[in-house]
Length: 245
Length: 329
Image (cartoon, rainbow over all chains, first blue to last red; front, side):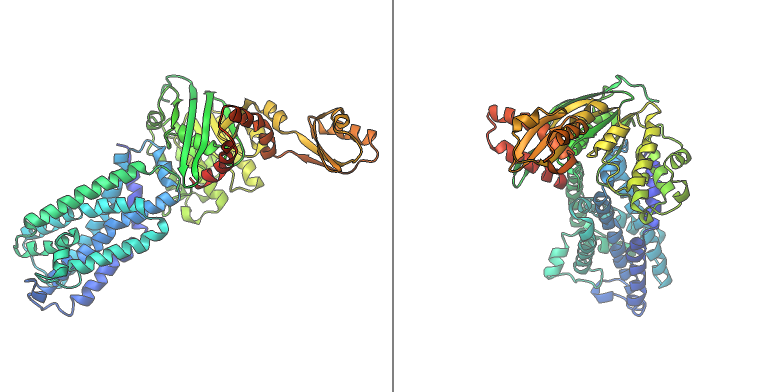
């Protein structure tokens, strides 16, 4: 209940953090214009049934927001490194207030990335109906739930030093096999593996933008299972973490 | 100010054992402490005495294996929720990307009845660096900000775990002056230190811990007399132990070849008598017994009791490990 002041300063810290600006905003933005720009007249890009600007808009949106969500992990690891988690545990800030603030902050970062990438998409000719925009972006926000929980979990598993490589590695790998950089096709090993990854379904949300069906039963199940599992693990990691690091 | 159900802090029968690859380490082995409101109490002991583990249990950061903690009649978690506790933990630094003022404001906003931020900045001498970013502060400045973070909540109980470890002499003095100012508002203060001088100068009462137990508890003047003794080392081959033990001010004698080591209750008196009676005495050294040494003497009995109770020879080895474990844990 007293988390409002805490949230305000956490958001302020986020805005001041260069890592966020570079990896969650600048990086996807620059890549978008580099990759989608020259291909902006390609329809049915790579057999995906989507225009290249739309495909990469959502692909890089997924990349940037995954990065933003998981970077909660780096922030928590940093706080644990300096003992700040213990300082907060001896304050009246509740577990819900602490974890809730981390999630809200991560979503605020994601929404910034989504807004910036949407505007960039429009500037390269992406035109969707209002209803399709809303449905697509809402699906992306839902698809980020596993990453919100995953960020908190990672924050309690890695050290401050290893957070950067760990997060960078995870995000790059997920982006690669989930079709962020190029469509992965409808069959094959990568396709089969990607099916069970939440990041794949983030990228698939693009189909909703042109009236497609989106996730279907498989997609919703994958997102739900990852969300539940990671949230459970994250809560457990948080409860166990009171020791001096 | 929140109403206090009772005015005491009670630690009862606290025990904590850590499992380590090298075997169990008994960090705290039966600690009972009762502290009245308004007292300033030093938890004094060498590294590995169990001070930090005791403080972690006091704050509810660590669950005791046995025993209980009551802070003003409440469990630690409830006292913390009520905003009654402020603490400066032993290890710790600050989160980055906020100014000093913003950080203190943020922490204050978590509490029901915080102090005015400007007042805290003045009291802690941080006014001049209030707008500096936390990642750009010196070690001494960081410690002062951590202290400000601990008191901005206007706590009834302030807990400080070795707060001056990173500070130079001047920094220490100014830190303790600030702490005294805060304590004079009727607050209860518990601080851990391994400096006898700090306990002596800034606490009303000192609790001596060694090897996970309390070995003495009383007014600081008494504690100082107990552990602040000196030893005289002298080369004096032909005089018997019993004869030396008869010197005024000497409380114990140990022969080490040609040299004798005299433990003294009053080293001034002992030294005068020694030189007057034995002109042949040479290589005289007077040293203050370190806390470590004093504690070993005070705890000698404990070990014997432990062996008698059947703990066997392993008791000594486990004691030795306790220090390392606390540093790692």
